[in-house]
Length: 332
Length: 123
Image (cartoon, rainbow over the protein chains, first blue to last red):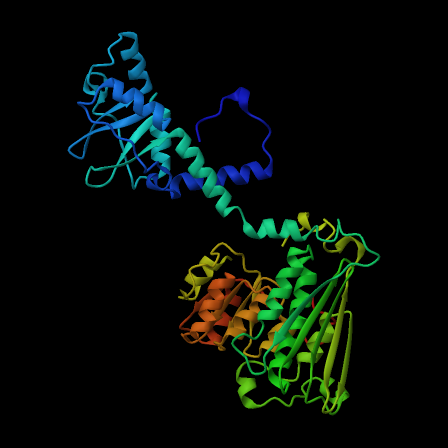
């Protein structure tokens, strides 16, 4: 914003630098009309200075545009009012004391134009005109600050806030063993939504503070498992992810039809998938092999006619635990 | 090479505006079999594929793929486009075929980010 004098300078942190850049960007992105005050109190040039005084007091404002026949003709401010009070001249008309031909600003201008005008003049407010020269608002330094702060707050990375909150999840909850369980129902044959559960699990892990490597391994494993439920089950199935600071246990289970020969199913390249599934880029008999490579332990249990339960676990080393506040400094 | 430079190099059309044009691409991987991609691709690669369904984007998301190129001027299904837009993964259509694209990118200095089936674990 306005230049900072040497004496005001403080050592700048990375976060400061980031926010300042964003503020500067916002100064160009935001339009004057987005931050200005639209709900305007205007005064007529032939109204008295007494009217101006009443208006300032009632509206708690320190200045107002003066408008005649819909056009801006001047600006009356607290300073003008003080001048008038010293002369004990409250009966005079506003036109006697107002600033005529006030400097104005366009509603479609970027906020940075207003910043420049405030810096270049001593004025506290500028009337805002649209492309037809009609008065549409007024802008003060306070409007600018509020507008930019609101925009900053709005786009302050929501994801980072979520991540920060979740990364401390287990810290304040005392138990001998705490865990977070996520469950997702997977529909048979729903290829369009295929991977949605895995995507949510991966995101949850990242928010909890998992390293990108851990989240990626879990994501790939659970995605293959999710596709298996979509492709091979009778009625779909459930993915259940139990997250603890030191381990992630993911089960993908269904109620049929079950796998006839588990060893054969584990063999690379073996698949019972049909051509439709292969056209989707799956069904090459690599899913289970893939899962095995991504997790630390995997067990496949299946009973024909009853269902299949695929159990996967990823263990987290001490420095990579989740949900205990270590996650906030990790890169994603 | 970043996504923006990639688009220029392959005469591509970026299909989703939400993509981060500055994202850096470390190498490439070409495949139509998503299980192969999941098994072999290393993070931050560009994925070249002829497959146009949403699973391409899901796979990319799981495997930390930096950008997806659809070969031979293919146009994706609406669901695919919507998912790419939502997940901020660059989806690029290029008029060149898979072979030509792999050659172009390799010549431009992108290494292969496909691992052999014999490599032990995913990372």
